[in-house]
Length: 392
Image (spheres, rainbow, N blue to C red):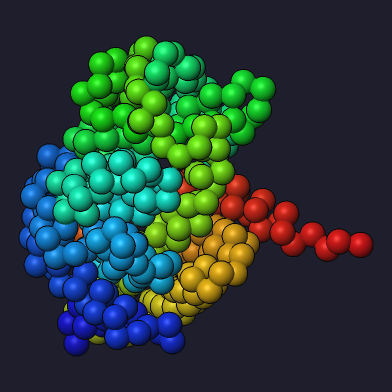
């Protein structure tokens, strides 16, 4: 059985419909044929070529969550969970992050809050992959604490004047527009608004292309906004309500990070099982050693459990249920599990696992961001704890 067929078989679950299975299969086929042969070059270049995203757009892969009336498929959480897990099979998490920031982290803000004019202007390019989005919330002193951002926007004539710094912004080096969160109401800690700021806007600059531990083929920027002026029609949604708009998409953002982690962990297990079954040692193969075989069996059980929890939380969201506790829990636990699995898989590759030429070395580095991005594990556990208090 090939690693690809193992991955497809492991993916099947009770929530799968024929449509979702088709999405998964298309995604895995794409990453096998288009990403894996080129990923090493993209890692060296520190970017995913624009034509790759455009090709995904032409195949309808960037429009899963776009409402049907706006030209998309109008699907929900389960589609994003399926898509992100399929992307995870690529073994190049930087590519996966590039796509998912566009489709599931930045894109939903435009779809949920955009005016008819904004949607008409920008959405066709977003769907086609010709206009790439990033989301600018994190700052040097504010990551998971969204309410702590310091970037300010003040009313200036028929527009707004923005000043501040953004940090760790994926897609902002080579992308086309960043959705910037800025404080607009000084009397309210949650008084934040969102603005559409195209690349090339005067005063809006990439001050540093960041050199990362992992996700090497995704571009990540430090941004400066120095007296950036945007017109009123670049305000996204309702003034001072950006914090709540951001919170609205947080469960989806958390979920796709888990999804790509699950896909990668499954790929790592498949790679490691194949390697240990072919690596001769002590008169047999590594896989014949009980310590290795049983540890890999436990890793598979853990990944299966994370996958099931993620899809259940996605199902809750699609059925109108409050899934904050469930999604926060699977983000906290699931991303830690992914890192545990990657540790074992690198360990069982031995010295070769420590070499840059091995896929597992890259996957191990890429996985480390998952318990940090999209809400750190400790923040997620607080979300769970707050919702576990028994009211007397």
